[in-house]
Image (cartoon, rainbow, N blue to C red; front, side, top):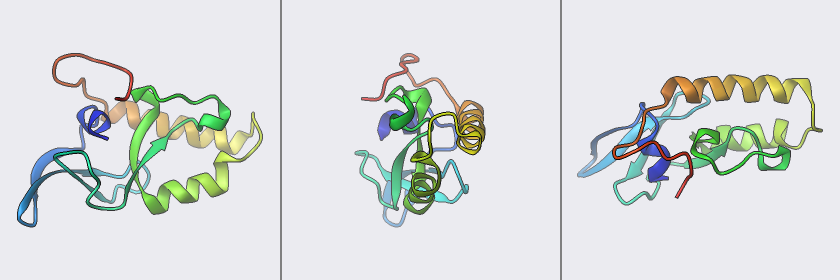
Length: 116
């Protein structure tokens, strides 16, 4: 998760209660997500594969984002299982990929494209 946080400009280091954490936004709804400094989700953050692995998506950082569990689950149920070439899935993937590109920042110390 920290590799995704490092490449998502919506995440900034801040305070969550008495602790420091990474605070950012869900790729889908823009809701607040909180990730502890050790990478553990404090909120219901999940890893989103923009292009589902069932359709050839990989674990490259450019294909990964953080999403709230509700949004990620809804996308999975409604779209990830659709047949290859489905127009609605392609539209959603394109929209999410564009959002991810707009939020991209190079991580400190390089621009690795693989999640670790």
